Image (cartoon, each protein chain N blue to C red):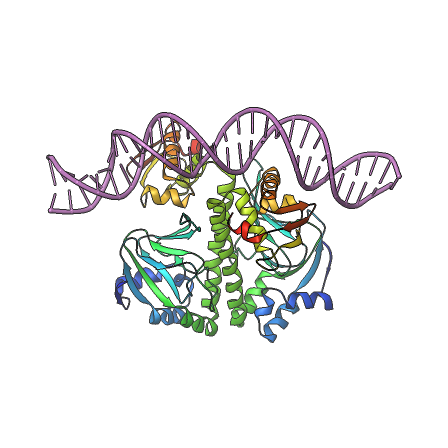
Length: 227
Length: 227
DNA sequence: CATGTTCATTGATCGAAATCAATTCGCGCT
DNA sequence: AGCGCGAATTGATTTCGATCAATGAACATG
């Protein structure tokens, strides 16, 4: 990783608004800031690999981090996609565990890193950190439950429709917005091959969805909700 | 729920060996025992429903609890299956969240219930509880990641083979064992229709797996590992 | 021991999505 | 603005698993 450094003003600002730090009291925030190390990752850089001893907790400041598992013959399955404010690597038992999956920068990214041992030390002294960690991991667990059920219950076009709805600024009226990352990433996140995502988009054309490049226009959100 | 009661000697013993309590110091154990309520559930009883305000944490003492999500038209997708020692309902933010899925007793079950507010109070005083909770939820998260990747990467027979291998007492030699629950439950856990599980078993017959009722015999674990 | 009910298996059909292959498009570069 | 490469689309094919329907096995019940 390039350019390890202490957090500057910008990074502190972003960290303060992150899922984890925003839950903490001022003293715990200070303690975490103290041990934070900022690093920037070039695209495709591996943050950690499945099975490695886990020694770091990470928080995304900008960019996206893809979490995936490998099968014996090298195929990859994405299990999570972390964006700004998200905690990466919390699926690890706080003490002495190993990473459950591989994390890779999907694009150039800025992250904060925390030494896991020191996090644990702080958590043992400051319950608000421990509780905030539990909350963060619980929220992730709930999200993955949703993803798993979504996979098992819905077809590709339905999953895409739900994703779009979840990213509509408001509800009810027509909207346009930009996909936050490239389509192959989105496909992975939804558990689809890129081709399947493409086909899903073209089916949704009949339901008022227009896509050009990363620009998506949704004519009638209600129609999408009904599938 | 029938017969609410304080934990007796048997229940205390089981609780002490549970995933959560076994990680705690004696004082935290005592505090948790203090607020534990034992209940037994008849088969099919609902413990809580998706979307309800979450006010209880549960620990399975015996039996199995099925966690599932519903889609609009009433179809169910199992997302987790909890057995003795497992923590149910931890996918809930500790403060004021709602249950992310529905929990149902898959068979007659004995559980311990903890008032979530009081758990949070204890966690705020006793870091070891907060940290143990984080660990428990982290472990669940890692497990679900594995499940999601498994779903996306492997076919039905492969998933069944992996399940069987994961439940083999030892490795390398032929073994027999009993499925811990009925096959329809196993099918749900693996994200399969019961028919698909049946077919998977019959394919595995050609690879040294014999099934009669709940009894499974595995002739050559190595053959299974190679698919 | 008989009986009814739930659970499991088997067969046949259908639909959804992975895969392979071939263009085409969009985007970053100079 | 045009170039070039990776990303995205489209088409054809195949595989896998859901679903429906019917039979068979296991189990609790009286």
